[in-house]
Image (tube, rainbow, N blue to C red; front, side, top):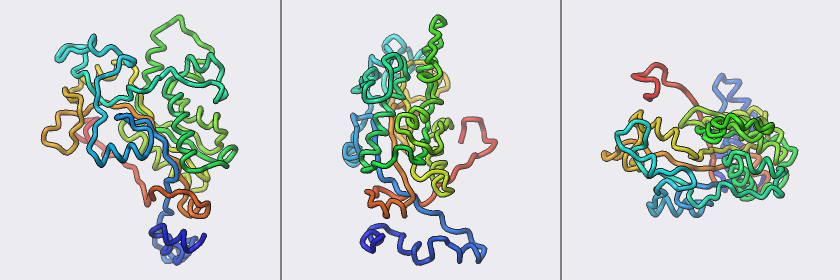
Length: 310
């Protein structure tokens, strides 16, 4: 670790001066400071045709929007549209990835048979690509066989719900190609990552809870680095119908957070992954440090006005 690297990362000098083992803080009875975590790689597929960090930054600073009509490749929204009708959707819009060909994958790049590639959940296909890009942007090369954890937050499981509607489809590969529980394991298997591998389902907070768990495991030594992701592809109208009946969706299909004109939220797709390491390890390895996570926490708010009311 050189002084040049130390000076480039705020806070590392103070931590080094206090001692890397924080022994003085522990002996005095104080809680030792949390070890910072560095984000060193990123991959993404986000609404607005965002496929990399530069495009994401452009969308944010220029106030662009990824709102669009539900793509025909998801479901025929004109047939489902019926404001006020039972078992219909109240909007034709949301935040989607219309440019993605969800059926496209090169089996030869991965260790997939043609059968697996044809029947696997599209979320797995896209997530594999995004994780590969996150590792590439980190400049990482030594991850194969390493104690790298995989933590994935997800909310929807449309592919499995669609598949079980065909009682004649008893695919022997079902456990490997269906079910959101396999998302993390698919990545660990393909990249030979040998740290913890798990999927988190805590609804809207899933990917952030996954990040918290990854940071905890990095600090405890359960893994040396981690891939943290969030995955959601909307493949059917089923959940949108349910959320329409609950009255939580915007009839205009647009999110207006913290705005007096807000009228609900809009469903959106996205697949993203970040590659994280302890800050000291990232500095030591000369990794590109894109952001520093100082701390994370999770909690529940107990018994509120309603089960789904924060």
